[in-house]
Length: 129
Image 1 (cartoon, rainbow, N blue to C red):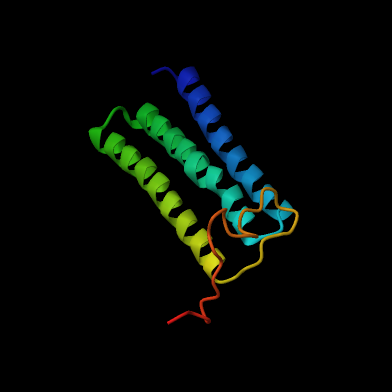
Image 2 (cartoon, helix red, strand yellow):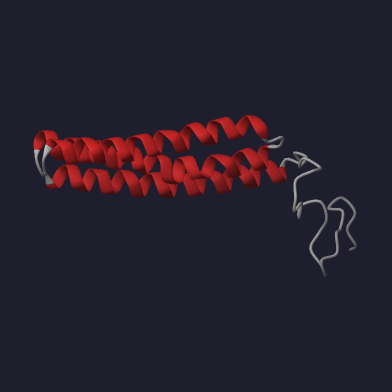
């Protein structure tokens, strides 16, 4: 791999991943509730971080040559980032809803404001025997 191609690819993947992280971080300041913040940060961890790992792998490929260990390590890192991001986002969103954290009133659509069609909203403290 020649130097110009390696530099270009590392730059494209590294800058794209960094811009995704930056845009997600800036967007977190604009949203008003916890669920929206979790939703905004998902693209950064699911797409931005793997782009940075790919840029690091390409740099390692150029500087040290091909290594199966580096390739396997990069693939595992990308898979782990995607899996951990999904599980963490789901867990954070679930804990936010279960804690009773209010959803910003202008969030649209706000499906958490009322129970879905056909579901009877029963107060958990008042149950029929």
